[in-house]
Image (tube, rainbow, N blue to C red):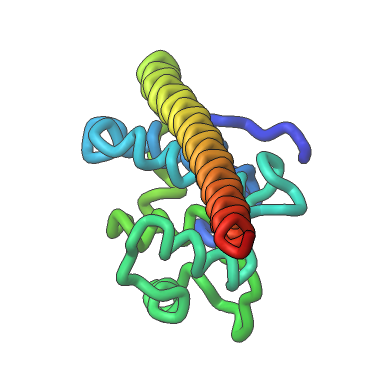
Length: 208
């Protein structure tokens, strides 16, 4: 993807600027929101926005981090992942009524469209926001999220190892029980044969 100016959108009209924004990567779109609304609401939702970015990167099986929009199926998955009651259809109706979408048929859902609806942002104000230099704060939010994700992955790994150890312990216990049962059965069979031999011997003695 071509290099973009992080502080300026291309276009003469607001719609042209929005078109430029929605064609930027998921991360670049999120950073535009973070810079534009940092003091209003973005500061308190920075980690949430990074969650959205990471989830989009994950769901976009073709372009990953270089993608900018999800197909309708994956857009539904994004909404479900964050327990959103908002539907893709309702989101598009809202965007059409505000003029953010003018096409009759839209196949993909850019992250910006979702964020506009999720945080009730006026898209025409969005594309004209002054992009303050909140790089350090944004990077700090990203660092914290990375730490959380790392801790989560390590926790999952420990849980997986514990589950595997438990399964191995159960398997070993079951194997020991099986050997014990087999040994008991063998002992009972030997006892039965021994009793049968004693009975036959006793019967033969009595016949003498």
